[in-house]
Amino acid sequence: MIGKLNHVAIAVPDLEAATATYRDILGADVSAPQDVPEHGVTVVFVNLPNTKVELLYPLGENSPIAPFLAKNTSGGIHHVCYEVESIIAARDKLVASGARVLGDGNPKIGAHGKPVLFLHPKDFCGTLVELEQV
Ligand code: CO
Image 1 (cartoon, helix red, strand yellow):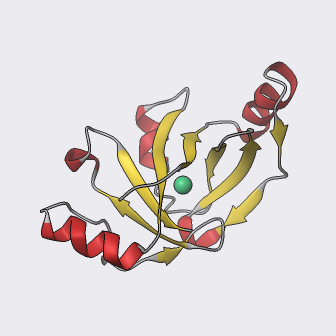
Image 2 (cartoon, protein in one colour; image 1 turned 90 degrees about the horizontal axis):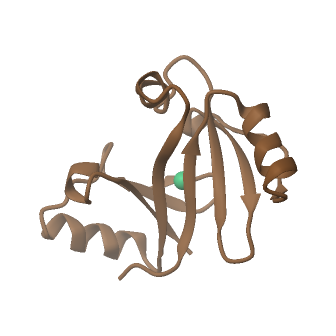
């Protein structure tokens, strides 16, 4: 069901420093910061030849990544995102298998303007999983 790895998201406590690390030390192509208010994050995209890394920084009072950064003060891998052809078909199959979809169970529009869903980390090897319809 899942297809390509779309991105790995890394929550960071200092977005400028993290961007400089990827740009200047690792030599990667990085985007300008982009606010995604509906997900409570500011994102910098690190464009790699085969996938992307997203550097996530909290935006607003109730950012969903704030508790993660409180626990992981140097930052850390927050989620992985896999591509699916149909997010509704994927969701229905997962729910039927007993997996938990976060939030109200309906897709939201993600940072790339495409529908996304998040799956409970306890159901997926301790890793928060995002699905994105492509
Ligand atoms: Co993501």
